[in-house]
Image (cartoon, rainbow, N blue to C red):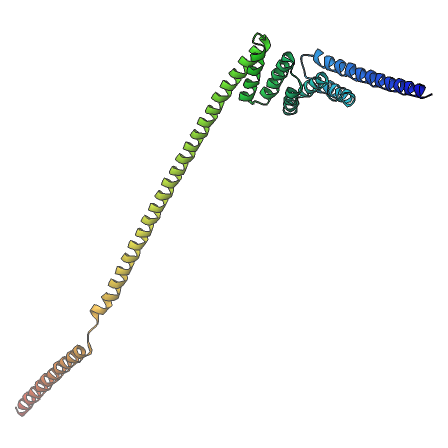
Length: 261
């Protein structure tokens, strides 16, 4: 009886393992199918189909989590969805999970692609170089390395152009500032001139007012001078009256003489 129970348990475990293996293979077939379908149309990137492939590979990894190949396919499906940063992280994890030189070459190559897609030129170049150290004759890695170096050079030139443009903009801004300063200075000078003109006009008006005030003062005479003039007039008047009286007296005497005739 004991032996039968043990045999029964072993059979159940074998059946369970066989069931898991069948599910794993099913998910892998689905993942590979979706992945290949996504590669068919070269005119566009079918992120939806590659997304389905990712889901299938993750289900397979739930059954066999340490499988290098399924993890590699998962990282590839993530990369094909334009998730370059996430894909690079997945490829980096795989470097510690294999000692096979060919597998390492594939990981470094695809990691280089993920880094290059993020415009991380130096890290991508380093990844391609590491792949070529393992497999120096790989033509695709050689091509990608040359392309990454070319893109780095192009990016450097573009950054220099942008920097020069920014410098020119700063120079133009400085020139505009200097022009504005000169304009402000000219405005201040004009204001000062206007102030000087206003001051001169005020001074002229003040001088004119002073002259106008001085004119009537020139015609004025002191009280003492007025009294002297008045006395002189009175004396002249008295002398004139005396002369008139004397003349009248002489005429009266002459009349008397005539009458006596």
